[in-house]
Length: 304
Image 1 (cartoon, one colour):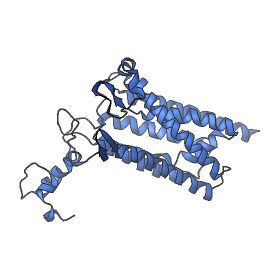
Image 2 (tube, rainbow, N blue to C red):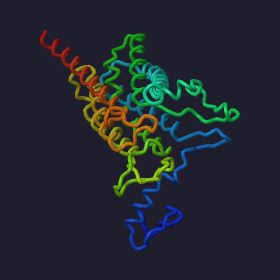
Image 3 (cartoon, rainbow, N blue to C red):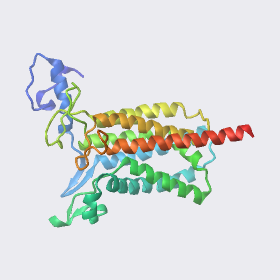
Image 4 (tube, rainbow, N blue to C red):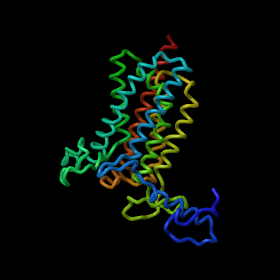
């Protein structure tokens, strides 16, 4: 990008010293969220958001990567069974993510406003469309795991094989979910003085903050995908990649939560730990537990 061709009205509304191009670019960067429109389409009170589109992109990417692995690696599943599974998985993510947010992050509000769990309209303002707010990643994971177990029982499939097929691909899809959060201007980081900090329009204090959505998109998404995809053919035992995903995501998310703003309705839960960090600790322990079981099972087979 040619800095000399940047027009001030295309960048930001704040005045900058014209002689300092680095400061000009950093200030332009810091105000990017204020110039992003989260809506693709608006019709009256109805809004079609990029966040919803990101879900479609995420599922499509994971699906295509799963088909690529079916074609090039030795898995016993057919293309049709994977297509069927993804219908179940989408339902699991949406229901699990929604219920996870309700129970983990905002139970009191939804207990007093139960209709908002499934109703996207504000009936107090004359049937105004407001959408459904609140999805939990950890709830989505729980939903997918439970529905995967049911699916595998119904079709007599090996759950560990299915989870190993999908786990290396999931982080790349997840990247787009965090980009959706960034476009929405939500789930921003804590106040900072780092030069790459950003101002988010939904922040009532309008302070410079960590762009934690971008941290998560890169480390929980692209970086974790690169690691797991690179290890996808290195199989120590059934369920190995699934366990690595649980442990890897849990460790990365736990670390990034230190610069992510806690949910306003919860704050810190245990000392300086957030709800997300507590759930990540559980995720890590579950991953380690499953990994020990899988490796013990493998050792038993080898010894006999």
